[in-house]
Amino acid sequence: MLYLIGLIFICLYFLPSIVLAYLQSKHIQTRLGESPVILSAKDYSEAGKYALAKLRVSMISSLIELVAFLFWIFIGFWFLEGVVARWHLPENISSLLFILIFLSVGFVVSLPMGFYTSMVLDKRFGFSKNTFGLFVKDTLKAFVMLIVIGGIIVFLLLEVMENFVYWYLGGFGLIFIFAILANVFYPILIAPIFNKFTPLEDECLREKIESMMQKVGFRSNGIFVMDASKRDGRLNAYFGGLGDSKRVVLFDTLLQKVSSEGLLAILGHELGHFKHRDILKNILIVGILLFVIFCIAGNLPQEIFTAMGVREAPATTIAFLVLIVPVVSFLAMPIIGYFSRKAEYRADSFGAELTSKYSLAEALIRIVNENKAFPCSHPAYIFFYYTHPPLLKRLEALDYHHRQVG
Image (cartoon, rainbow, N blue to C red; front, top):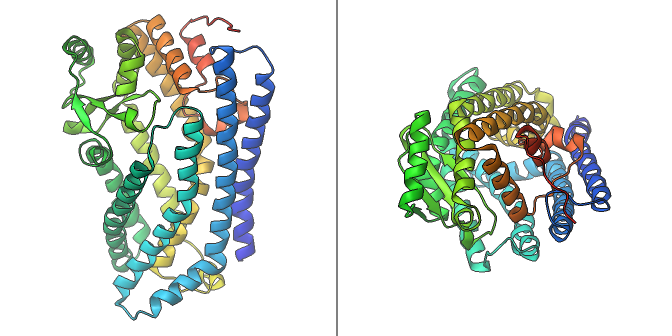
């Protein structure tokens, strides 16, 4: 049974992710030998090298995930259950500790690759401005949040599992509510833990943004600048929150590198998502995905737990649920990506109408240049991983004719 589960994980998740990374790597290497597009020759080469390095990290991370998955199902759950049982704690406390230890191990295992990406790879390519002290601070904050927020969610989920026959329906409802609350409270409670948000001081720009928002009926509780530059040099902007917590967030790097017209065009694109209710659609998609995951977890055969040498208990069920989330999410990504890319085209069109096609196209090109995003990808990689259309396709839809650069 365990060998079958391992084989399913390998065939449905590990091997496809490795094959896709390989195809993308070969595609980039081929395109690097051709004339550059969008970027200058130097930036085109740098972007390609960065993309290839990220793909190598991705393949190593996939291998670590495979090893971790096999460890947990073959020995990890059995060993952890035995350790927790020796403490002779009440059942609900034992279950909670089992899950928190399981999550903590996963957090620690992910640290080396996270450290390498932020402190080595991104620094090498001129993105990361992170310091070791800041990395440690962020890591500790994230771990505390995992234990506190994760502990609350797990405790409530355990209560649902103990008191409801069809617990997976109640569990789905509970996690879905938390997902919505996360959207509401993230910009006002969670994000400020890691970054400083200050009101936009440029009065002229603020008035233009507010005027644009009024045209589409978007109400926010403020326009804020985030000190992204203390960690990273890449550009971004987003609308965060739901209801009264909605706010406009501009990276300080974006203000430094993009013109006012380009910034307005980018925000016009984001307003397109609001106008087309894409945020609500995304929440619905997340809900469907969660429902599928909980239905799978709620109907696991007893033989799986017997083969792992553990009880079919709420704690082991939740842990196994966490293990299968990447697999189900990966298989759902092509569907999610398809609808997401269509939404991006609609948002581009809306943003171009609010400002201009030229301003939006130039802003997108500027972001790609600054972020060293390689503009060419393998079709299969796009199909599985891209939530945004490739830049060349977006420019084509905006009737913008990019020039070849040497």
